[in-house]
Length: 61
Image (tube, rainbow, N blue to C red; front, side, top):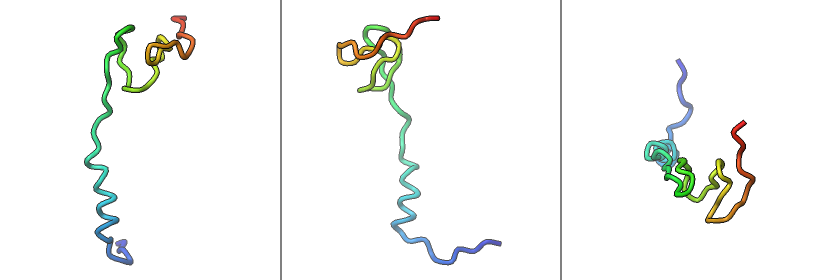
């Protein structure tokens, strides 16, 4: 049976447990296209960000 060489410190234990508090990523519905996207991210379907055209829109091919 594997036995740890040293006791895990409170700090390292806390680092490991901090991932338990993570929440699911939030999504918002885009006003123009109606697609779900992450806040402060480019809408990949339309290529818009902040009311400006940043990328070429995806084609439906």
